[in-house]
Image 1 (cartoon, helix red, strand yellow):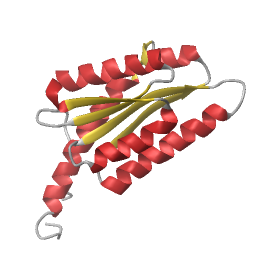
Image 2 (image 1 turned 120 degrees about the horizontal axis):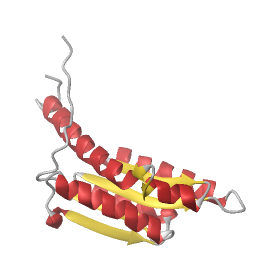
Image 3 (image 1 turned 135 degrees about the horizontal axis):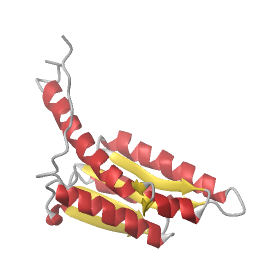
Length: 165
């Protein structure tokens, strides 16, 4: 029978870095509020939550990678919003933010959760930041907890002198 590993939703004892874009700050603040609320509700200590504000979504990956590489955090949550304007610039920024956050995670072995909204309108961003579509910051927090927990289980499983047990 297959062994199944699941992370669960208990944030007790875990440490999180939250990297938030100041560009479209009103959206970022709502995402951040949702993430912080969810982490605390699930047992994280407020002392275990560090928030790093960056100028824009393009700057998120470097700070996320630096936080993840510090070995201080169990997961990094990346939050922001890139909203379409008259050009495709928003797509370039969103794509590079996504790529950089993924690389930060794989390079460091620390879950870096991507929740940088890329929407065609401000209305749709607000809908995903506590509006009719929920709060994607809450979802990011739940993903961070579960990812950190399942990764810890996997590492424990494989820790028997580096071999799978």
